[in-house]
Image (cartoon, rainbow, N blue to C red; front, top):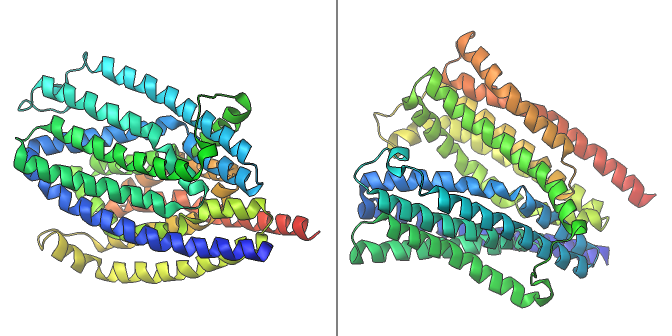
Amino acid sequence: MVNDVSQERTRNYFVQIKGTVIFKGVAMLSSFFAIPLMIRYLGQVQFGVWSTLLTVMSWIVFFDLGVGNGLRNKVTEALAKSDRVLAAGYISSGYTLIGIIAFFIYLLIFFASFFISWQSVFNVTSVSEHILRATIQIAALFVVFNFWLGLIAALLSAVQRTSLVSFGQLISSLLALLFIGILLYKAEGNISYLALSYGLSLVSANLILSVIFFKDNADFRPSFLLKREHVHPLLSIGMKFFLIQLAVLVIFTTDKMLITQLFGPQYVTQYEVVFKLFSIITFFHTLISAPLWSAYTDAYHRGDMKWVKNMLKKQVYVYLAIVAAVIVAVILAQSIIKVWIGGEFVVSLPLVITMGGFILISTWNNIFAMFLNGIEAIQVQLYTAVLAMFLNIPIALILVKYFGFGLSGVVIGTCISLSIASVVLPIQVLGILRGKMKKVNG
């Protein structure tokens, strides 16, 4: 019986990877083609406003207080124990809690929009205050609504159907491309119309996923329910996930701020270009590792530690391929960037090498973080993330100002701060595996 479940879990893991690669690949191409169309439709000024607005709106996802990740774990745990009633309770409480939060967030944004000079915020006069306010209200409505609908991604991950999450991204990207194409030929450039199109594509995708999921799982359809025995576990583990995500966000945000203050904003472009190039490697590693989160949760609560151990070993083998890919990227990076960006755009070799080091550290950490996230053993990860957040700036300043490392010093500072987890997390995972296997075998 255990072997059958293990084999099915492994088979499903590879199925999810195949689906994710296809769906995300097409979604990325769609997004790639959509950008020039949006620039043609809006012009550079309005497109700049739109890009800035989306960046600000993306912060709304942090107001879920980690409930999405908590819901993912708790539903997977309940299903591993064959308790669908408990899973349904978590789903209803999760949807209700996020729905209440989303409602008040929108009210706050809506009423605040009448008291803010949006032309001043976006430093633009060519777009009227009325259009900017309408755009904010439209974008906020859809983003906040999707904030609630987006919990479907946590549920699909919980039942180990992560490829459907990527399918949703594909639907959203294709609809956005379609709407932008229609706007380009049927309407004058208006940022409010784009906000409406973007919102419809975003919400439509998650509505389709929700229909698919709840059609197959009618007993999971959420009702208005807010019970302490469900909410407390969701928030308890969720807040830890939230703090880890926040710490990582702060580290990357402060890196760019440090570069701006120490060297000038033009050097942020160098950093961003090199980072984007190497992020291709992390993108493919995420495709491989992301489906494992809930798979680890399921295996752990079924006591299938042999499967966990074997999968972690395979992830280490994958890491060897990552190392090879990073070495190749470091060697070819400057040549690729010359072709991609232009011959006049120059990046330093130390920056390329240190960015390669950063990729190696972050992907190594991710191998063990996926398992620890799945079993909710994230206290140590939380401590290392917060410690890294506080160490990052001082180390970077010392390396740049006193040792003259230049731009690469900022990246080295990030590498050093994250390397604490590189040592601690594998030790923690080994300890958990030994303890759990003794318990299962004993």
